[in-house]
Structure formats: C-alpha cells, structure tokens
Image (cartoon, rainbow, N blue to C red):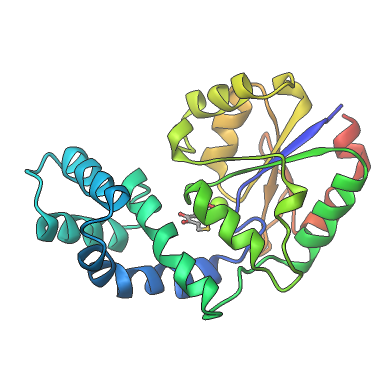
Length: 229
Ligand SMILES: CSCCC(=O)C(=O)COP(=O)(O)O
Ligand SMILES: [Mg+2]
C-alpha cells in the first residue's frame, strides 16, 4: 500500500513548455549579469568554485559564466547551474514576471492525497530552492504546505538507482510504500530498480500500456486502486 508519493516536476506536475520556454530562457538571459553583480556573495562564489571544479577549470568568473551558459544550452543538470538558476528565478517570481506552472489536475490531486494522509515529496533536477519557489507561486496559491520534503541532484542524478536509494534512506517508508511519478522512462526504471512503485505521466498521449510502468495521461487517472496495490 502506498504511503507516500514522490513527484517529478517538468513534464509531470508542470508543463515542459513552461520550464523550456519560460524558466530556462529567463535564467539564461540573466545569468551573466547576475553572476557579475553577485561576485562578492559567498553563495555565488561557492557556486563558481563548484563550476570550475566540475569543469576542470581554474577559478575565473568569465570562464565559469561561459561554462554555465554552455551547460544551460545543453540542458545539463549540473548542480551549480541548477542552484544558480534557482537564485535567478527567485527575482522573477518576486517581481511577478511569471507564475510557477502546475497542471490543474496535479494541484487538485496533490491536495486530495494530502487530505487522505499521504505524505508528498518532490524530486527534481531543479534545486530544492527552485522547487519551493515554483510551488509557492502557482495560480492556485502557495502549494508548499502540501509537501513534507524536497530532493534535488544532491541525492544523485535522476536516472541513477543510487539516487532513489539515497531518498529511501532519508524517509520513514519502505521502498514498496513509495510511488514515484515521472514523465521520463529512464527515471522510472531507476526508481523501480530501487524498489519503488512507479507511474509514467504521458501528458502528450501515446499511452500503450506496454512495459513495466503503469501509464496515465494526468494525475486524475491515478486511481485509488493504484495506491492500494
Ligand atoms: C524546479 S523547476 C525547474 C525544473 C528544472 O530546472 C529541471 O531541470 C527539470 O527537471 P525535472 O527533474 O523536474 O524534470
Ligand atoms: Mg520530468
């Protein structure tokens, strides 16, 4: 029986288009100026050091900016880039430049599950800070009170089994009591290999019922029977 649900964001609770066409371009547009204007901020300095280390570069602000932009263009889920994106989006949310997109079916079902006593968690490549910002600024209001915890790439990459094992180690549930929701098959494969139950969100259709993961087109199709299994 499922006791807790862990959800992905992009393509699962929230539209791919919002992340790809709103969030990522906003962060890219402001990245160089943000880094230069926060060069004295110890948090940003730490992220630049992490960038140089990950890239095998000497520590240099302009070289780090170039590397971060290259990772952003390739949608590389490198931890210092994801952390920096979160810091840049904070200003965007605060100024009302955009809302955090959450599908209506996801907002409704998350509230329903919470009322039923299920624990809810997020696992996204976006930093925990970015996750909280998104769910705090939705058109349905602040959804962060629904969640008991957040995980990002600090537990590992989403296609690696070890990441899900690390999450399980931090939660008071058996792996089989956890349901992981994602739009990416490789993430679901990794979660399943760690013993979690899985549901594949296929929001663009193409449900074929094939393979090891149950498939749905929206959160509304995640039935009580799936949670009782
Ligand atoms: C936290 S919102 C931005 C999502 C993001 O940065 C990203 O890379 C998408 O990753 P996900 O694991 O949610 O598919
Ligand atoms: Mg996703």
